[in-house]
Figure 1 (cartoon, rainbow, N blue to C red):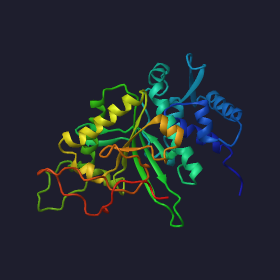
Figure 2: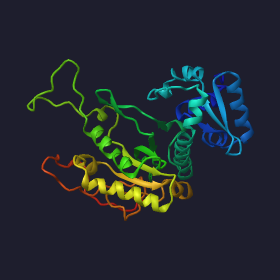
Figure 3: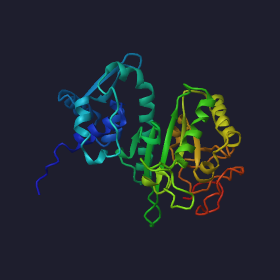
Figure 4: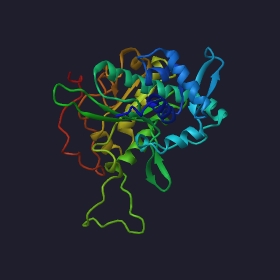
Length: 326
């Protein structure tokens, strides 16, 4: 058959740039084509810019680093591609001012995704560039929604058993909000974990009727684990933020269902970049004295039971936090 995919890497580059929101030239090179010379990536991006599909801004205080983003035309092109089905086009895509103001957070999110991607390559696991999906919309009803900084799909290689499929919501915190506001995100994710949508035009079913399932089950086989990536602060600030997350596990009501079913971990970005995301650099917020890998198959420690809390899910194996099995 004829090789009709002559623009394959161009397609991947445009899809990545649209989905990731923003990336530097070096980040794009490491994500899309790390096996070739970076000059080829520069030429590819320049060609896409000539075609009106991408644009760039220059950061004057970062060695005049070029930061790339998809134009509205580029977004329109990729929005019909099947590999971006879960993707929602961002607003103000082609606005240079908006790009300049959001560049800091966007590049840290991209750097975090790149760390997972490179770690998977080293380990022989499966995590493709488009398996990192920023800002996936999860409705809560009444116009509210949970929008994590990124959703990660990841398959471990395993030992002849085909590995296992992992999913994670990733929140990148750059210390732009106080520790209490960071910890308040647990309540938001708890609402998503328990949210059951009411059918439009129909009253809520009675207790005796068949109950509709939580909305997240329509998308995921199991609720994704929750990862907090901490940046923009030193070791003391990191400890303060982890303590705030830990305090919420006992001080905030209504979290039992989430805490008993979902691993929730936090790690400094500097440790993730130095050692790789699969290293035991993650701190379980319910047991912050421990250090584990985010990929461990462990049940979170049981949260204190309150009269109004539901019973724990019996389908979870009763294990404790510990190092990931190799």
